[in-house]
Length: 272
Ligand code: ADP
Image (cartoon, rainbow, N blue to C red; front, side, top):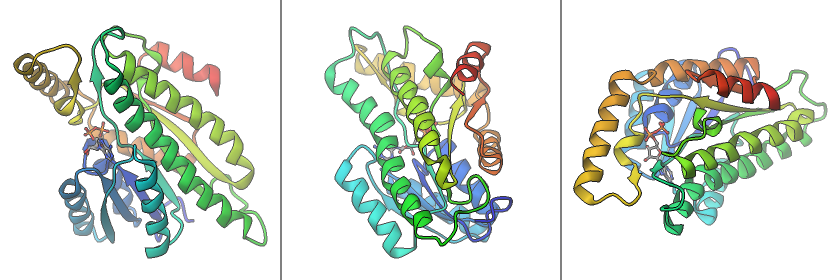
């Protein structure tokens, strides 16, 4: 895989209809990758593919719920059959649940862990297996660190910034950091890279769809709108975060804090 410019690379991006997923898909498309854009929101993924095509890239949109094990298995098999084993996989789909730990109900815990943690486990496991199998079938091992493929998992600075606001979300993202570190160690010998990205406050749409635990309909709507406006106004631009992701693939970085505070950087330095 020519990682420096991604020409001819096949990239799968989940949550590709949303802010960071779309920006990453387009950053890869711009550099010559073919993009497989997956999202639970099919029109949003289709829009990303349409934008990628304006950049001269090829692409296809898929509807998939990343938290659904069977659906993800089908999706991974379909990508392989329709195209081939991907060179890059970006597990980005995510949801936000905000509110106190004790008030967060089982259904909300399951949802946030299902999408944010299980979704990344499914994507990493299924495509990681495909990549590993492909490398094992080669007569000689690739001679560069991530020439066998690269998996990027979108965690969050919230993984290392305990708060009363986002306990379930932060827990799911802390899991993403650790699973990425473990998988990186496991796949290094096969020349497959794994990166955990920890964005801080980023200007995506995630708050617009957030769940506020224990808050009534109208108040929830107000919080969503307020949070969304704050993110749009002051959040780190997703396009810039996407550039950092591309750079992380090129350099095969283990962790990429983006707009993250010092305690996050410190925590990441201790597990790398
Ligand atoms: P971010 O870009 O920070 O991840 P966004 O809310 O902008 O935040 O994007 C998240 C994307 O993930 C959205 O396009 C959303 O539709 C998608 N998504 C949410 N839940 C799922 C899911 N279960 N399966 C696949 N995609 C999902």
